[in-house]
Length: 408
Image 1: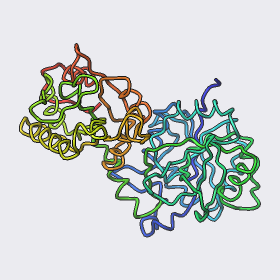
Image 2: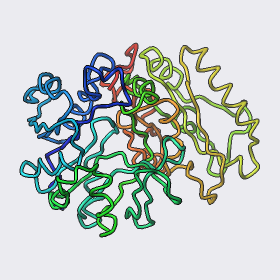
Image 3: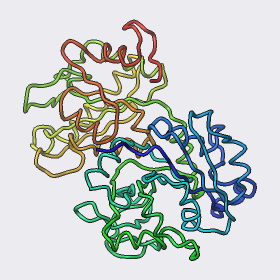
Image 4: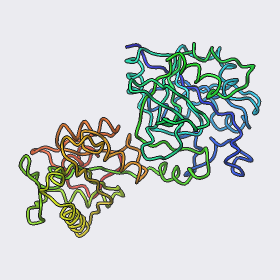
């Protein structure tokens, strides 16, 4: 496998008309959230993911971006600029920048933030034979936005509809494209069209546009209705997701289930750990497979009663469990929520606006580990010799007797 790209190219030239009056004086990527321009978060993430150079393709009020970003050294990046008239479309900006592009680069939109796993998207791209382009596509199973992409079973984008009107669309283009310079060379600057019209249909027709599918929501500053959610997401309140049986309480024997609170047994250190997390400001989430419901061993009502009692005792001990998610389906039901699939973790992400790339999932078996990997979580495993309290101390570099747990 060849080396992953080190150059990111950000399309950041539009006027941001949908965000007026906020964009009357600054470009949308310079809107501040929690005291920082939106672009700041993107640049920080790019550096964390191993990118070294960023080329900003500017148009509207370029001086605001240049003055803030400078040479990029504050992020450990080298930042360059190419500015064109605000009226120019994205295809013109990319074609004009052709001499400054690497052979392969990462292309993103200035108004979308998604926790980029560079190693994973690069691996997927290489496994696909390094096509002319691979875009990141949100699966959109929750109807978060109107779909504009149809992805085939083999991962090829078979349709791109910028008007979002065709039947069979099943995903949303969120940018984060791996693109070969050769693809950018297909764009004719004289047409002054959006890339969605000038390039993507050509790549689709040639079978050269692949999709990297993600269930992790993206956030942005492209529309007013998305701004509040983006503010919540970028607040970055720390979170910890925990499996239930084997992490918080004594795991039943194989194929057996807890049906009554009298069978519940907290593991040593579990309640203290919940208190630590609560005092440190963590959101705590439980995510657990409970196939006993489908098998008729545990009723849905009994599962809810157990959940309420678990939360009550956690609260009485000074902790808190903010949310819980259970898969009630059978082993072979084909659902998307049963671990090792990531559905429970992705549902928590959407409900609580978590950044799963910064969130630990603590489990006790291979299914938990696989679910964490699929969701893009950090993962830690408890064992008979290392319970939750000991694991949290190790994760947070604190002694077992520490009064709280610091953010990682």
